[in-house]
Image (tube, rainbow, N blue to C red):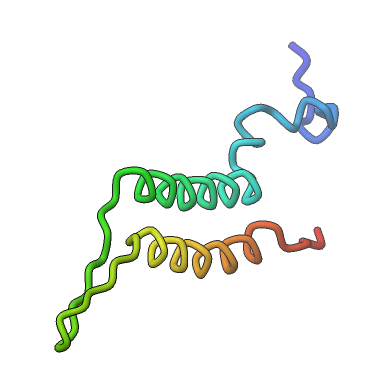
Length: 90
């Protein structure tokens, strides 16, 4: 029986990039994370309440809570995008 040395068997480059390895790339997870953040903003915008403020003179103000959520989604999007879409030198 002839046994080949494992270093002699070369896997083609196109076979090394399987579907499972494409799922593990940081760019994909960064895009998913950013998409979920802004999807949360969408749902809060559609179904969320308003923030109502009253002052001593009896007047009140009202603005949607989605403004606050969108601000924090923006603050989360920036570092996620910088991390996920950074240029890597292999």
